[in-house]
Image 1 (cartoon, rainbow, N blue to C red):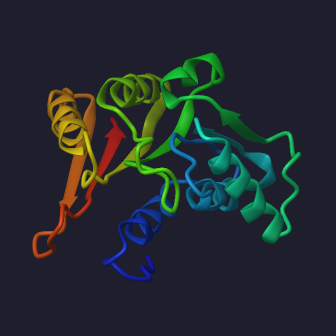
Image 2: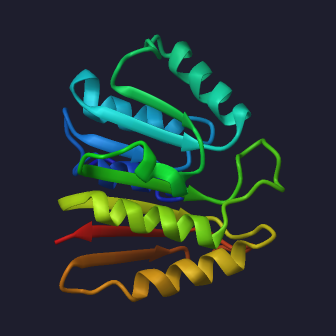
Length: 192
């Protein structure tokens, strides 16, 4: 397993998920952002897999499409689903078991910092993803909480995840202990 750096939470998450996601898998990017995670997921599953990406902002969709075009990937492939809707509505779009899902919580980097993920909708999306998740599948969450409402989301999510039955899920939490200013919390949830 090769990790670029543990100082970037996304690099760490990608290095773990590379071991879990394979060609042909069905995966979800619950928070498309600027497109880096959905592009990573597409690279892992290839043209034989299915990728769903959710975001509520047109800017996010635009940035994601630009990233795919910059990397010479046809964005009209039938296995790429760019969905301009909240992740809490994923059950309207996905009716198949999934192999993995990624959540990067907070706000769109470089975007409007007043548009943030919220505890109620995030927990609803996570609950749906857990229901859809195949045995052996994994969900990653990076909780960025240094914004308005971020502590509430962090505490609500940790409370929800801590209640997951250990007989059904394994939960791994990774924290940056020597960083200041609300360092991100990385979580992995694997279905047994």
